[in-house]
Length: 220
Image 1 (cartoon, helix red, strand yellow):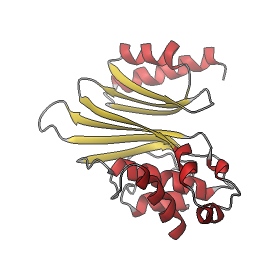
Image 2 (cartoon, helix red, strand yellow):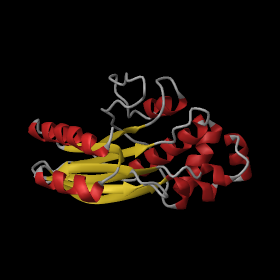
Image 3 (cartoon, one colour):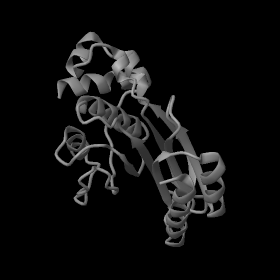
Image 4 (cartoon, helix red, strand yellow):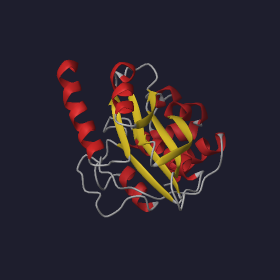
């Protein structure tokens, strides 16, 4: 759709979500952040965080009701960081000839919240857009593993993962998420985009987290 038509449909959906009392909104392939989303979300009483993909016009968006949730921190996740830590063995396992093949310009956001009212429980919400190509399932697998480990670095009372995972049920990506306890029985969407995720994994920190994500993918 042309933007002039698309923005009307998006505005309708967002207004309906606000009317229904939706506390958190997660979106992918978002553009027109400055000239559309920021103003509309503010009008609907949402705060928001946006991360644009490197060398691309779109990105991921995470928004929340300011009256319900208080933001504690927000992490930007650049999956291109994985390329700098891929060993020769890792590249062979991924069936790519160069670490540059890991530069897919995919991103994610991880927001850490406290509820604004008692009992002030903690909540971590992540949204992402994984690599699209069905011929590169291991690239997507190492991306999601890295994101899960980043999510679990802060042990929130509840965790939610959303996004366009570009993966089918039964794929390594979905199986990994299920293995880590972050997908409920409602995960049924054929395109892997179903919401309703919670949980986490134990992790390292900093560069160790990236290396661990790579190594665990190749041992799997």
